[in-house]
Length: 121
Length: 108
Image 1 (cartoon, each protein chain N blue to C red):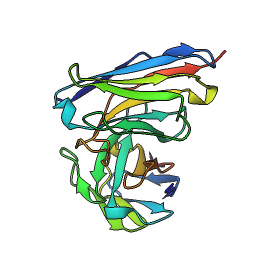
Image 2: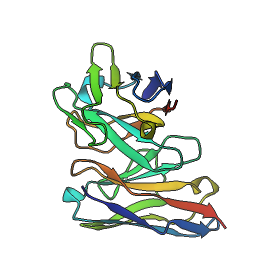
Image 3: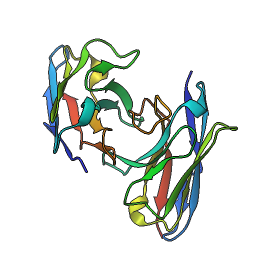
Image 4: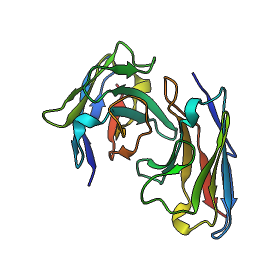
């Protein structure tokens, strides 16, 4: 059974940093691109970033480019999102998602339960 | 970026009725790379439909997707109590992947 489990969320002050992790199991991790999608309270989902199966191709939403870094460790089946220079508008539940293929193009076919990130002073 | 507009915003229906949800794209979605997700309160979204009409494993056949180019539809033929939720469309053909604002299917 595919499982995605996020960790690392919490309360941080504006300008601060936070690192999210996603532990994956139940599928061949290196064969699947992975993504982070966030959802602000009462809003629809918003794609944040994604990374190819080998980790050699990444993309970022304009709203986080230069502040967030996505990475993966295929030896540990783990996905990360390093977030810095956090803003109040980054407050959201952050979901780790799986894609069906190693390339970046694909629907998000499995989602984790989400990690809440709150940016507030 | 491709903007997706979903309509209606809210659909009030009774169990057993048919639900028809629309998703219109600001430009043509290449290769019909259009997905539909269901989200229940307090849960993560769940993929229902990919490639405009492909049903994900385990999704009941009362859910169907159709459309091409800029106009797509999700149909639920006979609403079950567990189908009352918010539904989002997503295009994943062009970067950035984008979502619609959602359609809430509520019980009348």
